[in-house]
Length: 456
Ligand SMILES: Nc1ncnc2c1ncn2[C@@H]1O[C@H](COP(=O)(O)OP(=O)(O)OP(=O)(O)O)[C@@H](O)[C@H]1O
Image (cartoon, rainbow, N blue to C red; front, side, top):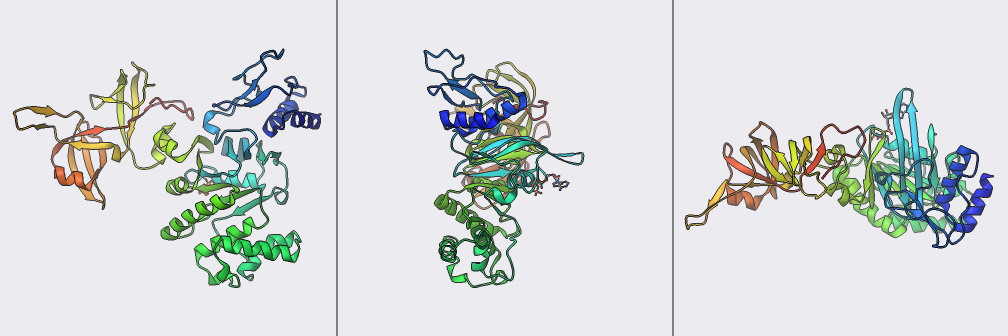
């Protein structure tokens, strides 16, 4: 029956994701849950991830755009990486995994659009490698599904998944040359010799190791070995490429070079890739989109800049770089009371009369230090607005100065001030100043766990 549904829907719509969804619904309920749509009906997902159906105006079927048809609940907006139903390379849905009593994954769902490089970012122990291992078939989920290029792969053995895997510790064969290592997967598949040679030459060129083809791994640098590992993973033309902290064991400079190199390489080969890292900068530099994991759950998904500018939770705000945390007392007319001062908030969605306490976050480069006021020489004095603070310490950091201050209520903050601005202000420890913020991020202090509680 399931097969019938697959065939029917595929034939009518050519739409793999809908097929997978219909199949699950069918299996769970044991009967057809929605009528077979006519070919004129269009299907897809809306901006918040719900399935929708667009019926022609004269259709006898109920439903229109925005009509959710999934019985398992929509994939939340925070779980969506990209748009489109037909162009998905990897889909994981509702993954759960326990190790004994420990919940390693708790309902993880996301999609990797075909041909994109997506970063899976999170602190140590957040479940990143477990997700990757489940996608590769090295671990079985307790619940949930894995779909690779439209095919349900949840129970497929690893070797049938068409997955290329690159680990942190390059597992190259020490007794084989670079060429033999890259050829290994193709030899196992018993590809013709001429084809193997052609593909290996191609890959040696791609990873810029042609001159080192006859070397052994011990004769290569760490970065070169990881490039061989990548070429070896790409050799059998995998459907998807999984990279688990591939540069984790390398020193900072080599990592930086390899990041740029990987991004360039991906732009050439466009293989759907999932890249695990705990390094925010690495994820942001390399990935088209980033999935942020925390304690086995997806916190937020989006392009790097969007995550940085519009973090959905306090965790994401804190995880994505240095930030000051203050207490907000109430919000009135779009201004949040911080340090007794109504301070502009950057989003019109702020409830006009919400009562705190709120967590108020502001990045060090979004704070400006000012004197209390200035005179124009004609006897007019203009007073600045901001939070009163005392300078504690100045630390030169090259292009900027890190200024540490204490606010009137004893809260410590730090500000990143351009070197030129410090040359103007000539701040010194012990001075009283005003601090003026931009881009405040405000969250309810005690939001229910895991519910995005972003209010600004
Ligand atoms: N085979 C296992 N048996 C027991 N616990 C495990 C097993 N594999 C993973 N875990 C636990 O599950 C949690 C998630 O592990 P995972 O390796 O997926 O995290 P991670 O985000 O990749 O961390 P890291 O960045 O440190 O590699 C960790 O607390 C880990 O100890």
